[in-house]
Each structure stands twice: as C-alpha cells, then as structure tokens.
Image (cartoon, rainbow, N blue to C red; front, side, top):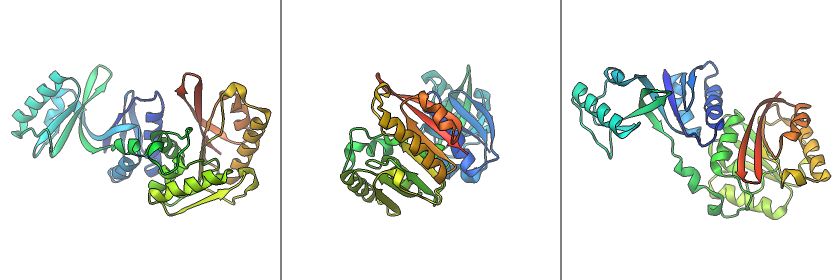
Length: 312
C-alpha cells in the first residue's frame, strides 16, 4: 500500500526521520518513494494504525490516490466527503469533480471520507485520509499541566519524536539515565514501553513518579542516585537529554560526566538517542557508538540542542 505522511514541517529533518523510524520499527522492508514536505512510501497496510498512534510530527497519514486532479477517477468514494489541504480554488474544483464523478454529498462536519490535496513540488497529490494525528494531546501534556514540573522540561512532542527515533517497540525496556521530571518516560510509557529512569535529586525523582502515576503508567522504576553508579545487563534503548547550561560555559566536571556517562550507556544498550548542547562532543560519542543522525534544534536564541541518534 502506498501512503503519504503529511509532515508538520516544524523542523527541517525530524518529521522525515520520525516517519522513517516508525516504518522501520514495524515494516523493515518498506520502500521510500519521495520526501520533500511530504513523505511517500510503500508499506504493509497492517502497520498503519500502530504508526498513527506513535507519530508526533505529522498531521495525517493518507492512502496515495494519484497525481493531479485527474486522479479523482481513482478515489472510488462512497458516502459523504470533505476536501482538505491545497488552496481554496483547488478544494472547490476537486469537490465539484468528486460530486460529478460519484454523485456523493459534501459533509464538512462529520464526513465519511476526507480527501486531501498534498503538494509535491509544483504538482499535487490526492490522498484519502487513513488516520489524522492527534497533535493536541501533546499540548495537553505540557509540563505546566503535570503534578510536578521543572523549567527545563522538554516539549512532549519532541520527547515523543526522540522515543520514536530510538526504534523502541511496545513491551521493550527504555532507560532515561537523566530522567528529571520524566517527560521522555511519560511518552515512552504511553506508547507501551517499560520505562526506567535514574535521577540524582530525591525530590525530582519523587516528582517523576508522581507524573508517571498521573498518566496511568504502572510499569516503571525510578532509581535515585548518580547514573555512573548503576549497572544494567541490558536495556533495549536509551533516550535522554543530557543536563547542561550554555555550551560555552560547561565546566570540566560536566565534560567528565558526559564522557563517563556515554561510556556507561554503551555498555547498557546498542541503541540510544541523546540530546547534547554542542557538536564538540561528537568525537567523544564516536568512541562508543556509530552516529547515525544528528538533528540540531534551536531552543531559544542562545541555545541549540543537538539530538544524536546512535547505534552500535
């Protein structure tokens, strides 16, 4: 089945990387067709619902119908419909063609079919919506709505993307060795992962547990202490955002922490996604992991995070 991800474009590389990662998790043999603002691939139809429940940086996933208005003949619509995307004149033209071709009615509030106009360069693609992505859920889970929060908490949508980039599956163990208030663990737990966290501050660890319970996550273990003092025989993936201030002001002690933490993580897992404040740590990371991807993300005018996707 050929599908089209309607990417959010809120970041230049993360939406496409997330789509690829989710397809690889459930359907390693997918075929990529096109990506530039949208993402088109041949996939197994059985995995679409699972992917829809995971992705954060897409607006919708659609069945590919064809290119141009002439593709209306391939829609085979039964029941009411609504047209989304494109420009007003395009939506009107397509709606008129659908009514003429199939004799069906428009229903703007509760249609049985959503037909989407998607841009592919200067051309358009017609898609039939398989599932919309509920992006409002991430706004509802922002840190200011948690029982306990920290000012440095990551946006839930970013946390969800990082978990997806780790290629973790439901039922597997995900570890955040700098878990803070638990933003990454919340997203992973809601996806069905078994979550483990380490937090050096007792009150923050307590707050993390409160947050996990608040979201109904029961399979968790929050450990108190310095992550360098722990040992794990195996975890399926590590996802974490390293503690830091401004990259130019990192102390020698902080760099020592980074070096020792990365070495530890390489002993625990073969896959990791980590947030760091600079590319200067790339040689350090490359000693222990194969760096698959790096995604810079501007936090504010004086701070850019670099999300490293790592493998063995």
